[in-house]
Image (tube, rainbow, N blue to C red; front, side, top):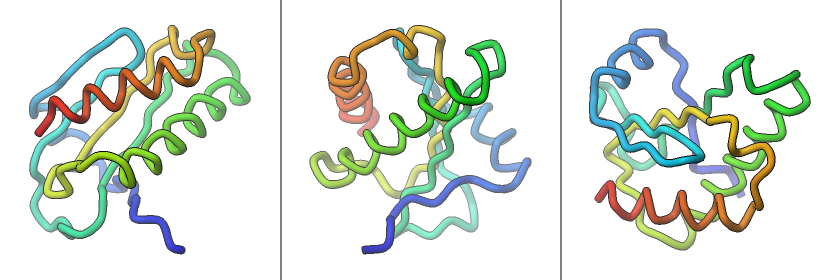
Length: 113
């Protein structure tokens, strides 16, 4: 089955999202808002890990975890597909339990509605 997640690609999209609403917790900061020229049937989300978090292996591990959580979130909770999301990871994600991160992110995406 083809994934329903599409990453942001344009620099303008990132800049516009950074000006929109945001929610923050101890694991991530989530920027979200409506973007023009967006397909309403696909979840438009990007994951950002800064170089301060560690080497490429650690950063890719965080992104893999976030992608996995979002694939579960699409199936379990109703996420607003009209919004675009930008998820910026924080250093606390590296040493935290996967299930704690997952539950926290599910709560945040429930709040966004």
